[in-house]
Amino acid sequence: MPDGRGPSILNSCFYHHPSERLLCGTEYMNIVQLKHALRRLSLGQLRKLDEWLHELIRNTEEAERAEKSSSRKRAVAEQTFDGKTYRLESIRCGKEKCKCARGKLHGPYWYSYTRVKNKVTSQYIGKDLPKDIEKKLKSRNN
Image 1 (cartoon, one colour):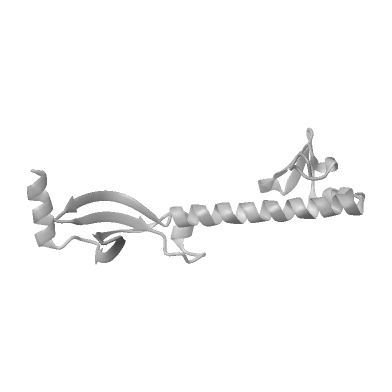
Image 2 (spheres, helix red, strand yellow):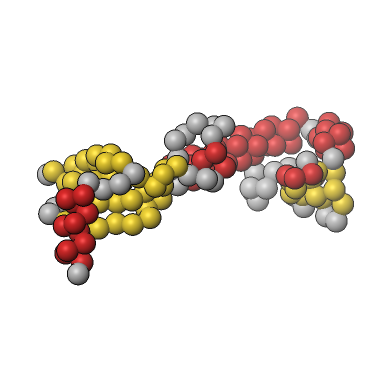
């Protein structure tokens, strides 16, 4: 497929997700119209379309995975003390139907990060820092 956009019948088309219609030129095609148009394609064009759709699906899945993994944690605050980094993070639990999947993350929770040789280890602390660590961080910042 030289242009990477699929068979020529769909070259000027793009999918408009909210209404489940395909925009071709200045007109929308609904799914039924799209199916009728696809039935007119030759076997070679259908194979090219199949290849293009599989590539599109793979790319979309990869993008969604990357977005979910990169946005699993969001740092709210961070301070380093005595070789440890204390980070207040809002997190995504990973459950599909949870509120965090729609953007309302859990927390924030405190974690500590320590580097030993070439490995970073993390430890969950909780909603609040222990009082002694909080005092040390505050006195260091004043």
